[in-house]
Amino acid sequence: MDRTRQPALRSSLCAALTAATLAAAGLVAVAPSAYAADTDLMRNGGFESGLDGWSCTANSGAPVPSPVHSGTGALKATPAGSDNAQCSQTVAVQSNSTYTLSSWVQGSYVYLGASGTGTTDVSTWTQSAPSWQQLTTTFKTGASTTSVTVYTHGWYGTAAYEADDVTLTGPGGAPVQVPAAPAGLAAFGATSSSIGLSWSPATGATGYNVYRDGAEVASVSGTSATVTGLAPTTSYAFQVTATNSAGESPKSAAVTAATTGGTTPPPPGHALVGYLHASFANGAGYTRMADVPDDWNVIDLAFGEPTSATSGDIRFNLCPVTECPTVESLADFKAAIKAKQAAGKKVLISIGGQNGQVQLTTTAARDTFVSSVSKIIDDYGLDGLDIDFEGHSLSLNTGDTDFRSPTTPVIVNLIDALKTLKAKYGSKFVLTMAPETFFVQLGYQYYGSGPWGGQDPRCGAYLPVIYALRDSLTLLHVQDYNSGSIMGLDNQYHSMGGSDFHIAMTDMLLTGFPVAGDTSKMFPALRPDQVAIGLPASTQAGNGWTSPAEVTKTLDCLTKKADCGAYRTHGTWTGLRGLMTWSINWDRFNGGEFSKNFDAYPWS
Image (tube, rainbow, N blue to C red; front, side, top):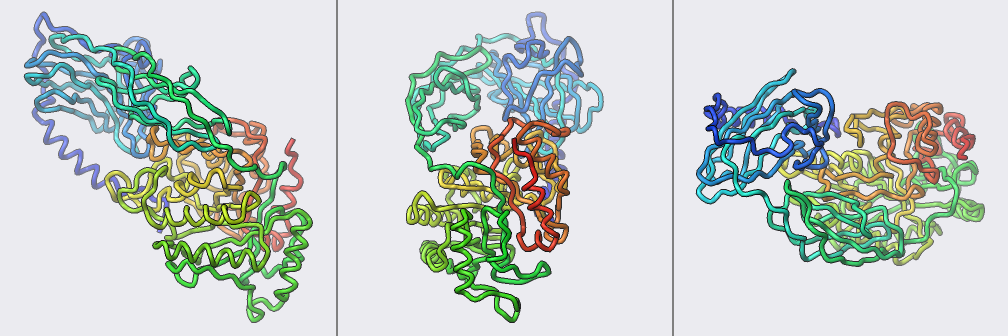
């Protein structure tokens, strides 16, 4: 099954549009002529003043100089993930009055409507408008209606649309008032690089601006935000303002909050991470621990696997001699680990892999996981743990929609188990993770089963684990292979096998992104020293093999902003930690091409 296949929207879309057609059938007729006293009540309906007066969800809208229906500006808005690129404006109206709403639009599945009418809210739409097309509808306000919200939006997963010359004709109402400053501002969930904020809703507000030490750092539509990119052990003062079409409120009372101290970052320099087939054999052959080349800085023993999917009981054994005739003795294996560590290498146990499904469904399984993994670490004298949960190990229960506060037992129990192990072994404990793109970057578009259900519940399921452990995480090396096409921050799809894919996927980790397109739920950026890029070492090792020349282009772009191609990164990260590969065995089988290319790369 194609695990990155998008949800089947076509049938549900057709059903939704059919219903919309029936509902709007009586509303698309040419509107009657306005009375002489009627006026156009829209503020900046032609977008000549940018987005002044307008609010667009998920920062989806932008003013453009072309194409325009008239004048010098128009709106261009781009749906992404679960956001339909709605741009709206609240307009003062009179009660018991008739209004005509009109706009010129271009694009596919473009909607125009009004809500809060006090009677029947209305909308109209066009399935296809390759050139400018006018949409018009009418409505009557209720007995107590003083304002309505006019909006335009596209459809989920479709291309950008344009709108221009939006008008609302009818008797004018009392002007919209600037909202009061929000109350109840509070800080929560401080980490070494981020602080969460929440506040009470302000009457009449359509959006909020967040200020840090007097400078605006975020604009959101809801009553919470997470401010990222902060320094460890640092105090900040935060304020919030409320906005609507009339303007911006005064700033709220300030609240002061401090980031935590975080953990000691890994040693300076760049790292090459590789998996060693220690418990099994395949076409790459068996490699003794003592024979692992010195190129490798972090060696992940593949794999520790559970006795059953839900037991939490992890076991690790060397490859049996019947399968690996050249396997060393247990004593020699342990002695070789100590020799690698004496040479400055880190040796970890990797849990999971393609065949090792781990589901900590109960607290008993959680506790067994901690005790059994501790036994492996202690028996072999290892430096830490790598989490390589794949397949159906992690998925989100229906209704678990916020990665910052997960409720699904397999997620919560894994987080608790890893925190316990970190606390047990202290600051020198090495914790790494190797998720697939499906469980991380796909979360930019989809998270869990989604707000309406029907999505694969594994979408983005690693995000709460990474977020909860971000101050303890040594390295995240997402597998940029065996992947379908994934949407990047440029809202374009990227396919594995070339530098473009690795650049776009890594940029997401180092920049941060709104989960499922919700800007109030920002997954914060990781430090560059916490990020390595995962690739297969040879064509035999996995789908998505990338040539050495393309790997070099990837590193040039991310660390020097050179040779980036069409993608534009959001920064330059000279401290990018390095590369991970599956596997050390396949690299040796392929003549060491992957490790030699890494060793030869001029990082400065």
